[in-house]
Image (cartoon, rainbow, N blue to C red; front, side, top):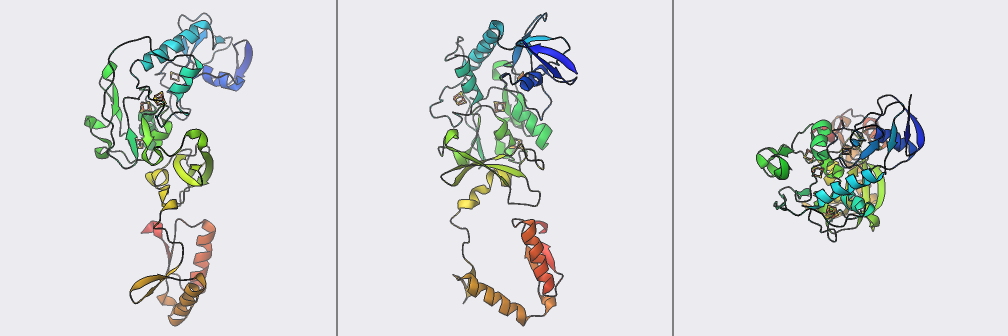
Length: 345
Ligand code: SF4
Ligand code: SF4
Ligand code: SF4
Ligand code: FES
């Protein structure tokens, strides 16, 4: 184990740990924009800089290895001045419409500006003026609010594998976009929504949640995606018993925060007026609502009329394992081995 001192407190960590991880072990907060523990660290944003005694410059704590005997200061005057300058540079071309921004209340830029007392930029210059990319049904891309942390690019390449977005241009014109700066609709994006979950600011906004709720009004409910047998963990964000948005559940051991388009953006079926809530029986070519008793009696009578080999059962990926188990028992008890599952269609 390595032993280092952070803000006067000694901590022991495994070799290979970073200063940020050592600070986390002590419960010492260090701000981050581009850090994500599931990705390789690139040290792009520099908001996490700390002062290491005898080092020539401030170092990025998220990607600097802890060393034996290191003495670190996370909130010295030099560190605070560097963080304030960093935020001031970001604000220089950031549209400060926090009043109506969907990210208010869960935006790292907003939180850190509050924490470090930065309410305007010391720098005057050009402003970005990109059109919103609204070309897909699921989320809006507002690159005027992008702080170029690169988390979305790395999640898309390293976790999803789609590689749908990249940085183009250099300097002030740097921008995250699909190939040829095309709209998302024409890219290789599979709309998994993981970039949306990872964005620390209001640059990527799910459409379903726009003007539905502020983050502090939402209740988090962890559940399993009802769409297929993979069983990804979802975090539903709910207001007044209505799902406002969905995130991948990072603590779920099956999916570790990963989602596909159905789980991330397809849960609106819950409140759909088209959902079946009663059994329907076809009479004279038209479906009519009926009671469960009448529907089950009709099914039982029809099953008695046919040979076992004429019966087949089609189960559902949206039902639980237990329900599917009982369903195949039922079909087999009728004398048929023809049981299949909608996920194989
Ligand atoms: S992204 Fe953050 S800082 Fe920017 S307008 Fe939205 S809430 Fe404010
Ligand atoms: S939605 Fe998924 S596939 Fe599309 S850009 Fe984001 S991470 Fe990549
Ligand atoms: S869109 Fe969001 S996650 Fe992607 S680089 Fe910009 S700020 Fe970072
Ligand atoms: S969080 Fe460390 S450089 Fe971005």
